[in-house]
Amino acid sequence: MATARPGWSRRAQYGLFFSFLAAIAGLVIGLVLLTLSLVAPEKYASVRGIALDTTAPLTSGLRQVTATVGGVFTGAGNYWDASHQNAQLKRERELMLQRIVEAKAISLENRELKASLQLREHSRAPVAMGRVVGSSFSSPRRYAIFSVGRSDGVAVGMPVRSAKGLIGRVIDAGSLASRVLLVSDRASIIPARILRDGQPVISQGRGDGTIDLRPLEVGRNPFKPGDIVITSGTGGLYPPLVPIARVVRLDDDGAIAIPLADPASTSFAMVEQPYEPQAVAEEAGGSAAAP
Amino acid sequence: MVRAALAQNRNIGQGPIPGAACVPAISVMAACLLTALPIVSTSGWYPDFGFLMLIAWRLLRADAWPAWWAAPLGFFNDLMTGHPIGFSVALWTATMLVLDLIDRRTMWRGYWLEWALAASLLLANETAEWRVAQIMGASLPFASVVPPLVISALSFPVFAWMAARLDRWRLSR
Image 1: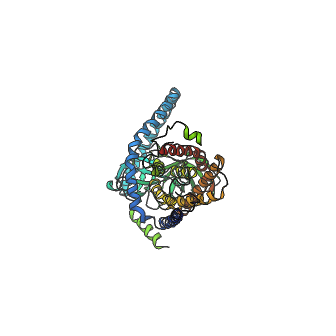
Image 2 (image 1 turned 90 degrees about the horizontal axis):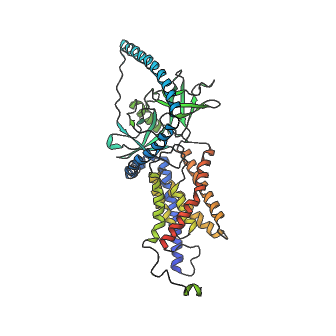
Image 3 (image 1 turned 180 degrees about the horizontal axis):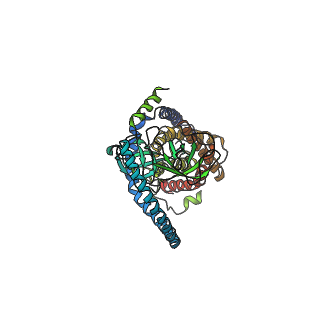
């Protein structure tokens, strides 16, 4: 086989030489494929979809096992400090009851105001419900594997959210599974607002499970630890008022936040239609025409 | 030698298992398939299992497979892990060629040298991943490659051990 010095055998020498040529050809082919997938990623949509479909059933089958194991550990952790936790939860519950009454009053008022303005709200039915079953392991990109695909109506570009908050958007769709770009990925830039005062900010992932928040207006740092950030609906992809993240630390001109919907512990999530499909299509057409 | 030849022939009838030549490639594909495990990683600090297995085999033996096999193996890895298609094809084949060149240069091989080689190859892998992510619109500071690099360099001995065990098993020695 391919040792460095094959000896006097012509056959072995040629074999080594052709193997070397084939390896160089492989390198060139790889570089061409890589360039193509950087320039025109949509060319590979079908082959990536098929690869997703082949592994996703295995992944979603095993997901139950890891979820159970993880649940045992967190469950055991919850017993650790039960009495203290109980008292704390009771206090929080009292507080929440007050808040619920306030919120109900506000929503009633809101409905009356909207009725008087004759605003129409379009109801938003989810496209599909699914589970986050896996993720990218070893790259700076943050993807998750999601257990529904084109056969359930999922298409590339649709936003994904869970009950706790925004998860991301679909970037590859196979017929049984899809790949989701998480909000913590560097390439996922989301127009957002601070829930406390409605100030517009930009949310961008940091690739390690956290999110960078930057205010749109330069000046005083508007964040406080514990602030909740919600989507603003600008751009037309993500629906407004979906919670994204909670601020944990301030830095010089922005803040670092943790996503509210942790993909590792999210059981169910839903895929929705883009909020304003026309706006998204226009933008995509514009950006394709621009270069 | 003579003494060894006269010793009890415990190994008569034992030899490489059928399909021994394919065992390294199959083990690399199995390592790639580890990414189908249902673990949701929020930090992305897991090592690149397929690449670790590949360099573990290649550092163990030069003739684990013909160099060009790295291209189809890399294609398989791209499909499984969600890297841009062609990334592992190019990187893995380049790794094979680089190691062929290094094999001609190094005077001796030892545990520390292999580990250092593996660490520098892993650094090349992480840097390439970082650069490709940057081109695809996810530009992160370079320091973000350090934690996964340390983790994968520390897990290389495990993969080297696995490759050595598999090698003994497939050759029945």
